[in-house]
Length: 433
Image 1 (cartoon, rainbow, N blue to C red):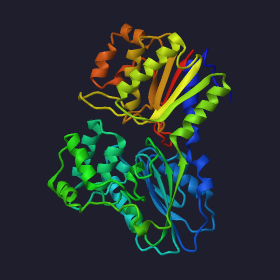
Image 2 (image 1 turned 60 degrees about the horizontal axis):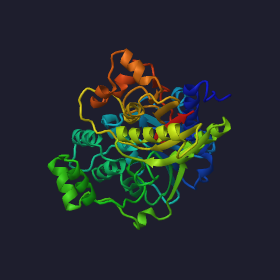
Image 3 (image 1 turned 90 degrees about the vertical axis):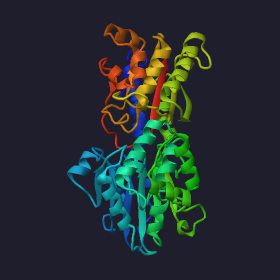
Image 4 (image 1 turned 120 degrees about the horizontal axis):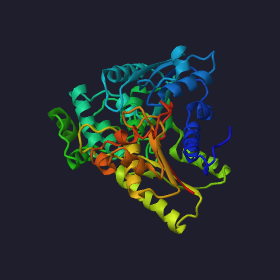
């Protein structure tokens, strides 16, 4: 398939780069090299995440038909690949809520914990983990209700906390995350396949690390809650202050012999987009796959870089495309606004660009969903602000209201691919011609 021209169809070109990034992270393309041989005993598949359905589908297709295979994976609502939903395989896939956990997720986590019980040294556990698993694999620690866990989760999401901070709290208030799921599996061998959605690709941060040792502590979790002024119920505070909710640590013998494989990462997806750009005659520059910070501020910084390239040819010569990934955050200060990290980044970027000629920008979440909306992200063009003004919209007012979705929707600039069945986090591309 021919890549759209970056000069005559910049929107199409940017969308093609996004699609290439997503395709590189699809489980069907990345799983085979990491699968172990079938064991003497049973093979039990467990897992959680936005890519969970597609990961289960890939394992089911690749695993020998004569070898025993069963298990349960939980994914987000509407994130089961249509073919696997129409014709289920040997691995059960159930759906639950994200980013705030629900009762369906709690039940799924309880079932997964039960599947990990009673295994032998001859058995193999394949654990399929991807971003989103923290909310989907929700089994509160003793004494904490689901409703209390939901309230804490909502507060964290609105606080502007970084993903590693949020997941530190989540794993210490969980009965299954922070390495606890792996300890349930003993003495079976555990092989974890990971699709990374976090800056730095740390296994203990992805989905709050249900099968890997946890280096953070209850004290760390308390410090984060205090830093962001988040209240927690007495039972949660008591468990953290006493250390009763401490997670298993590196060196714990129960992790001996376990394997962890990273089967898809943000960097690999950015490199796939870069290869497509290069083939189209556009020089790509990958800033980083670990960018964090407030979305609108990160958008301003990207805009400043693009304007420097456009005006002065520094630090890069045009034409070029600047690529970045990571996980930014949105501190929600206004009720009623709609949008997520990608669109808030873009609105901050558009305001800073001020209609800079020759600059087109796409930002989108690789899972196909920006926050809780139906879009993955949006596109900014040189005439974005002018078109908005013609419709009576003031960009800064929408940004102040955390309503980036409401800004881009009337402009028909949203990117709406639907669920992609993978998740390697934010994708950003700035084309300067």
